[in-house]
Length: 169
Image (tube, rainbow, N blue to C red; front, side, top):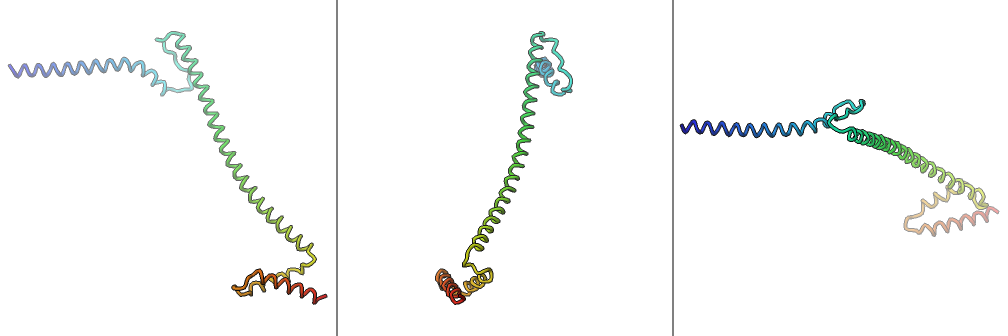
């Protein structure tokens, strides 16, 4: 009899647990029915207009339609902003490339201008004796021992040049 009583208690415990679980499932199903409608909207084709909920009043459905239109307009605005930001990024990259090219061209132009001014000064200098004379002076500077002061050597070379000019006359 004790065994029968234990069996009966175990079955009742299982039934009550089963009943509690069934009640919980039924309660969550009823709440899921409300939320399922919203989640199923995520999986439907969004090109079709939304289906109104017959359980809601026409005012609530109209308000939700208006909210949907507002959200769609906001989505379009955000998509347009993203597209404009991507276009701006591309244009900024193009601008950076153009600035780099311009910088290189400006450096080249500066070098050409500097060389032109140097050549002009040489041509206008009445004391300039030509490239051959400049090369000769450069070779003499290279032959100078390292312990001598280069400024002194340049001064002597200039003096020698002026002596050379006097001798020529």
